[in-house]
Amino acid sequence: MELDDFSDAALVLVGHGSTLNAESSAPTYQHADELRRRRIFAQVIECFWKLEPGIAGVLRGMFAPRVFIVPLFISEGYFTEQVIPRELGLCGNEAVDFPRIQQRGGQTLHYCGPVGTHESMTEVILARAREVVRKFPFPREPELKDTALFIAGHGTGNNENSRKSIERQVEIIRSRGLYREVHPVFMEEEPRIGDCYKLASARNLVMVPFFISDGLHSFEDIPAMLGEPKEAVAERYRAGQPTWRNPTERKGKLLWYSASIGSEPGIAEVILERVREVVNTRK
Image (cartoon, rainbow, N blue to C red; front, side, top):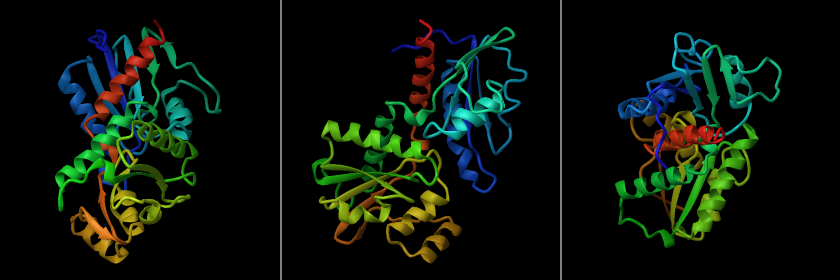
């Protein structure tokens, strides 16, 4: 589907950000840069919950008649339904429903859904899984029919909706019949990430972390859960070295472990799909 004319519109990408992890903001800047390069919108701006520029002030000085706000978050929940709308002035302090399209002065504000729950995230996951085995084809690139795909997330200890997002993607990919098997695994909930070796009947495993940004979870916690010694992982991370070697043989399986999905170039298309979606609700 072609985009409408957005030469009069601004796009705001909202990331979480972190003062402890410099990598956390990288995907937001990456996709903002790509969408600026395409010259689809009059303006593309990044903002963050934990970094500057902050969410609360992002709309000041933005004079485009239409503004589209897309949260770069994995799932719906506290941040996308309460924190971000409150900071933008779309709702009050109470957790209540609010209009996703609002007039403010001469502007129309469109609040879009998070990227992680959009159906087109399936292609992002598949692209990430293909990428890691093609980059490290040892001893050779495995056949999909002989491979188990694992989508890894945090679990309900963090946000119960993140599990739903992952399980939905597992259902979609299973239905396509591309991989021999597809499983969800979690850091803080069953089935656990470390259970992947016994869950899979296939010898070849590919694990894709369903996180927007790489950080301690993807660089340190998950490799340790997959069997790497914690001290060795921490030392490699401090030295700026990869914390997982692709593929690693363990418990009779070969496991490829990818980067998190947030930096996958296809996310830019998911952002555009979110914009299309909110525009189409008005037609």
